[in-house]
Image 1 (cartoon, rainbow, N blue to C red):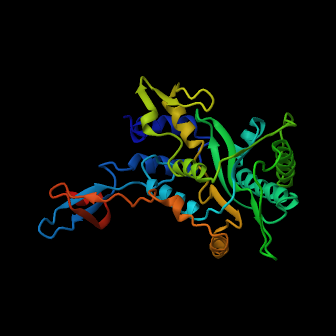
Image 2: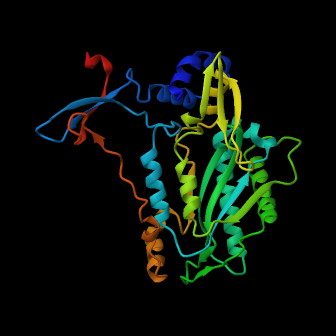
Image 3: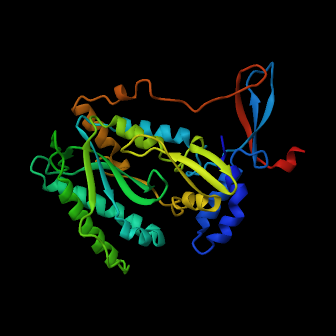
Length: 354
């Protein structure tokens, strides 16, 4: 298996020189973190065996913890999935996707924080409006929105996935409503999202391209009780845009990786220069402090009491969905006796180990 840290080490200097005009501080920080991740030349932590008869000590390289690193955040991913499943309610769930057209992607790359924030704002306004105006719902919506910036072949492709129950609540009366079989019209959602997005971009003083298309794309499909959609999106939430097992070759200055197209379900390969490969990875490093997951309406983090109240009143126990899925953080085992080890010191610099 070819490590991303190895590729960064081989092509970092060429990448920084070739793309110096478009590199942000967040990109350099991501490169440094992933290059140091779990490497012997990086910081270490000291673990000690909990068996008093053994007492073995072991130095372990630190993980970087960066949200774009394929090694890290696995436990955090699982925690997020469990938290989302714990908020489930008895309704049919839908996966709604809003995509930014290719004509606006250069603008999005140049003004990432502004454009991505506007995408979230316009998505929430669109879905809240449709829920409020729907004859069967007519209340406050609740949904979770997740920003993805890449396609399967790692090109820049900003879009937002929304996991949403086909239900609403009237905050004043407490009336819970839901519908089945159909949520909202895709073309109508795309049209409203387009209008709101273009207006918001103009209000921000951004110049729109002359070839901006009239028709945008929005997809909406039923995903049953929502658990599979939540698990699918959660698995790749904080693990970067590519897994190291999909990097096939790194030779003669070129990197070859594979990806799985959504339609054919058959692996394809793509070969690019090492510098361009790093550029594809950095394309999807979000600005510092930017949240790629946001919850709205009755699924907002501030609505925990309301969610629990609805689960009690509707006699719905989400813990059934969690059965067999909860995982604890993997324990560090002693290489001598096999007992559990505990961390007693962190951020130890290598020269101190001499």
